[in-house]
Amino acid sequence: GAGVSQSPSNKVTEKGKDVELRCDPISGHTALYWYRQSLGQGLEFLIYFQGNSAPDKSGLPSDRFSAERTGGSVSTLTIQRTQQEDSAVYLCASSLGTGGRGAQHFGDGTRLSIL
Amino acid sequence: SQQGEEDPQALSIQEGENATMNCSYKTSINNLQWYRQNSGRGLVHLILIRSNEREKHSGRLRVTLDTSKKSSSLLITASRADTASYFCATGLSGNTPLVFGKGTRLSVIA
Image (cartoon, rainbow over the protein chains, first blue to last red):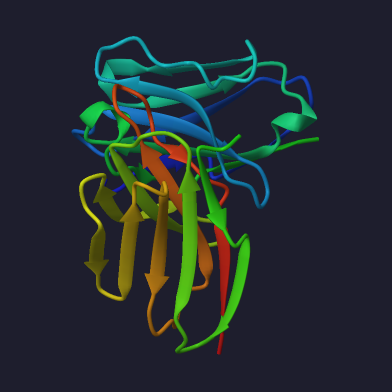
């Protein structure tokens, strides 16, 4: 596709369940990022993939959060044993490498609600 | 604390007026970027200014960068359908991702 695609657009689940969020980056973009945005707030960095390098996981808030990027393309963010404080919009972005400081292209996010 | 902080947090102007938002940061940067976010959507990249540049234009947007004061401003002239949140993001050296501020919420009143 022409842009970054995220699915699902909305997810409602019960506390304690696991969720998987998917991101399809722009073809050819070697860098992929996950962010979390709470209502009316800025972006909280979660994780950054750059090519075949080990991902920068420094922003993951707990060991319940993990992410994979298969084949250098699609990425999934998994949250295990969800808690109510996990409710937020999860945004994915991709860019043409350049050490993480290039212009990023965002998807429209997954709005996650934990009941 | 945040690397980039926007000021003001919220701004309301009349259609046709200019809007100015500011961003301050703390450490040396490689570049500074501005993004726009419409309600319920992802961020859209507006403009990138490198640390050795002082001013940059794109359509109705004008960005300035003062590295001695560690600050940047975004000017939107003749505002119209510009209601959105605007974020600055700093690009650092090395293999580190952008650091985003908390944003300025701009409301343009018709």
